[in-house]
Figure 1 (cartoon, rainbow, N blue to C red):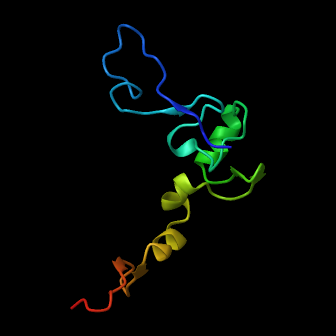
Figure 2 (cartoon, rainbow, N blue to C red; figure 1 turned 120 degrees about the vertical axis):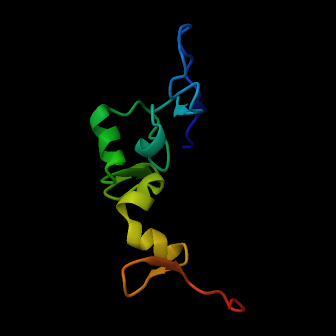
Length: 106
């Protein structure tokens, strides 16, 4: 199930919160936002504990089930090595990430 994104309504006296000033959206079904967003909507409100586990890269919801894996939204933090390699980078002898050269590059 896809997430149903909304921007929650703000209070009349809001002076630029993360929702209205930051352009942040949340899923109106499961309540997910930012790094606490599983790949797919679980179809019901997530508890704080589940949201925290998604954020920590411990669980993910996809294909109708919960899995012990990192959600795509947080792979760049919790699964850096695989994420960077899939994006075409490698670690040089000093541990710095570099882009694989493309044929024709000098």
